[in-house]
Length: 299
Ligand SMILES: Cc1cc2nc3c(=O)[nH]c(=O)nc-3n(C[C@H](O)[C@H](O)[C@H](O)COP(=O)(O)O)c2cc1C
Image (cartoon, rainbow, N blue to C red; front, side, top):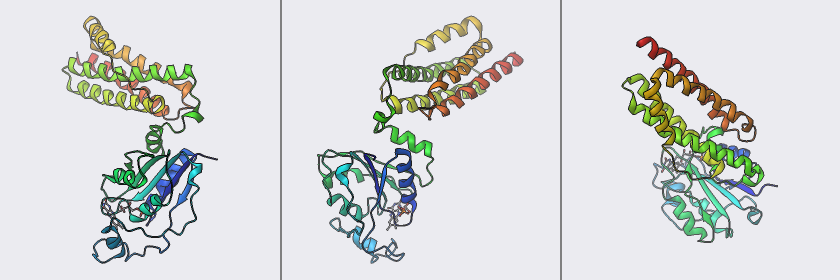
């Protein structure tokens, strides 16, 4: 049995879909908060000042009744709570749910879907209701069509599955070394961007620096390590550039990027987001090699 629960309220199915995907990614149990009196279309009409939802949401103390059986909250350490944003916050029925249990010692991760509004101060409100003994995350608005990979990237940040991933010391050292290299890659490509006058190459370096930053974030989602970028590699490459010129340097970088693909490959089964990085390493290898050829022809 999982020690993670994904609980949600959903009036029209958008949040329900996302909740199910989180439960699948996290191998978590799912619990739907079902209102005792279902919300009709008229109830949900936010343009009507007298509709049930407008009236309920105007009263911060409103607690609409829940019909679903009690959730077995004590069994779980981590509880995702999902809901649609109504009038900029969580629907009152979420407050009923929060009031119904003791969340002491639990980690609560709110998430929402909406027509566009962010999650705002909802986490603060949740904290006020459940009290300080629970650890309430700031939460996140998720797109109704969020991809499994993006969901995984978000949930990895909580490290709730680390125990099941069993990252041994050796592997952790490797992942941290990769993370450092990607972080240094950002500085390196930013430095190279400054060192060329070729507009197309500037753009290539800029985009590659952004990719390296994304890679570092993916690795951080696994390691949890907070690292500082070093400019050592960037300085070395700047020296090499002076000695061998840009086309030859690009060929060297291309090889390093291709090698990156092979370095990540042994870890991709256990850490599936690395597949994204591997695809980029290959793409960067090709781009750098193409740019080397273009510059050679240009000169
Ligand atoms: C009564 C009501 C109030 C809403 N208020 C907001 C709002 O303040 N901001 C927003 O972006 N969307 C708002 N929405 C849109 C919903 O948050 C959005 O459609 C959500 O994805 C629906 O999720 P569900 O299908 O799980 O119910 C509101 C919807 C309703 C019914």
